[in-house]
Length: 134
Image (cartoon, rainbow, N blue to C red):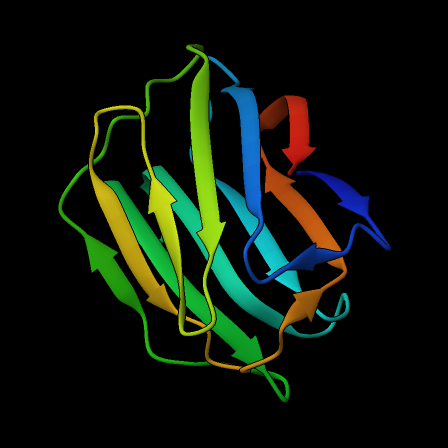
């Protein structure tokens, strides 16, 4: 499993994070993580092709104090192994609004309540080709 981490990115309320990448052709899953540190994740987006007992499911969660919190499963799954995807994350004071390429939206609460997060990381079988905050 590969890992790609950016520090000091400064993703703030009112900004939009756009991620473009390609899951590996044989990917089982990958994850996008946003948080204040490597140990704490306020938003974990985990598209699962076939992993952890799930097939073609997007699971969202937070990781705080060494524990995973309440999972949120999404109905839409626009990801395909080996095909480029785009995820757009809008950061509002109350939540993250995640737009997927099929037009569906995920509303995930800003559980930690901070107005800025500085660590964005990617886990799993994915190659990130573009990362932009504006």
